Length: 293
Image (tube, rainbow, N blue to C red):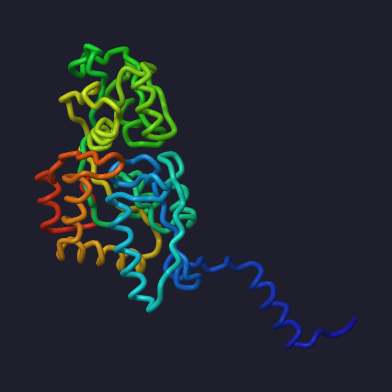
């Protein structure tokens, strides 16, 4: 038998170690810096947060904030990042961020404990409440009237889970996005649409006949909406959190809010006339990425 040289044995051991040890995962910030590319997730019909203009380009309140965030990343890197916009839905947005396919999800996503097991959130940019919208001629006036009604909401939304807690007697219908859910309400396929109040108000304002729809007075869970990002990259999150706080301190976030919620916006120059709530104004005094569940 041939005696193996110690150097040969050492090389074999190193090769075996390289095969068996797991590869060190690249962080979001490392990947963005290496590739020079950042992927921004957007929604197609979440007016006024994130939606498409007449030319099919993403626009909205959350999109504007994300553009500021990317500008801050550009300054940190000393060069311009290429911005790739990728559509996301309520059903796939968390998976796309958690898997690193989307770096910043700029839509209308609620920050809650269950989602923070998979992803992270920056400082909230909006506070909403879950409500029901019905057709004005439906005769539905209060929560009790919804018993055994057909309720539509968007698949993957927090409203879908909340529905099962508050309306077990009603029938739940799921739509792929907010526009499709509203279309089902308009066509009489659903008796009510359950969703964040501001999204309901936005869809109503953008409809052909806004007076045909009404929001019920009952309000349910208060929710903080925030831009979503990968969970396990503290350096990237620190940059994003710091820039969000700077946007608040400098008034850019408040100016963006007035643009999208208190002035005419596309399509058709609709005006939501939705002043900033006391809850949001108060939260901006001491901005924090820690959500109150």
